[in-house]
Amino acid sequence: MTLSRRRFLCGAGGLIGGMVLADALHLASAQAMSTSTWMSMPSRMSMPTLAAPKVLLLNPVTLARFVDALPVPPVARPVGQRAHPAYPGRALPYYRMEMRAFHARLHRDLPPTPLWGYDGQSPGPTFETMRGEPLLIEWVNALPTRHFLPIDHNVHGADRSKPEVRVVTHVHGARVPADSDGWPEDWYTPGHSVLSHYPGVQDAASLWYHDHAMGITRLNIYAGLFGAFNVRDAEEQKLGLPAGDCDLPLILCDRLIGKDGQLYYPVSDDPSAPWVSECRGNAVLCNGKLYPYFEVEPRRYRLRLINTANTRFFDLSLSQGNTFLQIGSDQGLLAAPLVRTRIELYPAERADVVVDFSGMAGKKIHLHEQSDAILEFRVREHGRRDTSIVPATLRKVPRIDPAAAVRNRLLTVGEQDDASGNPMVMLLDGKMWSDPISEKPTQNTIESWSFVNITGDAHPIHLHLVRFQVIDRRPFDLFAWNANRRIKYTGPAQLPPPHEAGWKDTVRADPGMVTRIAMRFEGEPGRYVWHCHYLEHEDNEMMRPYQLLPA
Image (cartoon, rainbow, N blue to C red; front, side, top):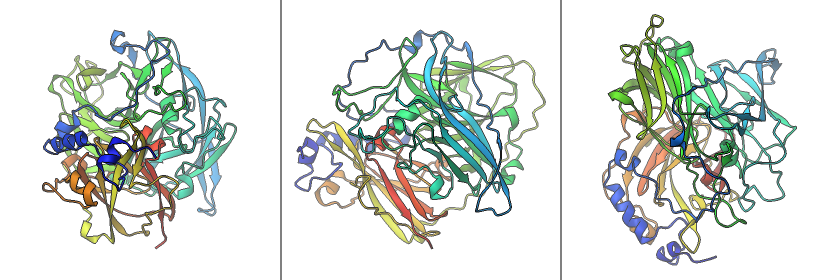
């Protein structure tokens, strides 16, 4: 193994994920910052030299803004009913969802872009489901047999013996049996399908679905394989929140686009190893369009914000001093609504917000990503009577007592570098995907997991199957950790801000911090996964299996 500068500074132990001195100093300064200050900083993730694009890339600021209407994904409809052994004598709604190649204009002035999508569109149709109403979805691979994005055959699970085009769908945030969760190695090729069972045993929440095939998830999602999946329940419906066409997903992602309309995915300058540690585009798509507009009535709208980007976090605000009223996060409603001027979303995170356009008749309001206006709301002069409300109390969110945990796990978030300090493999607890399973919680027990981030960047960590609560974040001494693998805290624990005090399934693990979560492992026993939701990291070993043992 090559001795990198990071490994050298970590001593003879060769700590995987160790930091160079500059990284440690960077963390020391980061620990002194507030969360909002750190969130606004650009990533400092070291990257290999990128190869020069072979196409002329589009500069999106040259495009006319707000000339295309915002697409609203259609609602998925069942095509029939089918029996399932878990429900003797009962027929369940049956959906058939084909993944297909198609072309779409991302902007009026661009040529059609080749994409992949569920039902031949991206985002795919929105699933509307109810708690207590199970359903079946047949996920059909009707894609071509050749991939149009660059595969790195050195990445685990993507070697040359594997077919180029492989898929398996995961509904992010769903409480489902293990055989319907989208196990990354349960991929299948064009011409095949799988039938998945979604029991509908969780509270109302804004979920989403996407591809999860081992070693190429980053490429398949970049190609367009994602969509919204809403769970509703009677308790939420009684609240009187905006509904119908005033309740819609707003799915955000970034892309690099050629002037010819083609998607461009960045590669390293080594043709034999094209993987790069992050993919950040200069064009932000809202429901699959660049700089769209959306006509609204002067009333309340519920917007389900979903970050489906590979690596980018979004810093969202409204123009003219308008505010969001956040009512929910990843796994459902908050205890009470929160007025927010900014919404920050790391990859896979969601924010359920209400925007009140009453009193704005005839005005134009912009949604900003940092300083860039990416969507224009055009408020009509008149509209229907608004009977929706946002109650002062939404839902009880009982706190998990971390003292009730039967196991407290300490898990590192790290990376292995090459001789130049460039990240080559991203690791959780210093382990590869193929290493023996080390996390084996027992069904219906509470555990706390503490993520010790020894890299220089925040990482969004996602656990399949369960919902959890953020307990705290606490700064620690990286030098002490490198010297003896001991946690030496350098400051008090920081409680999560109010918007993180609800149920989550993805948490931002900040650099130089120990991020602690707690959860009850409800659900069916079996194999599930946990991983970083930076897709480039997830594809290159930053994903681990865990085994849920029966009670």
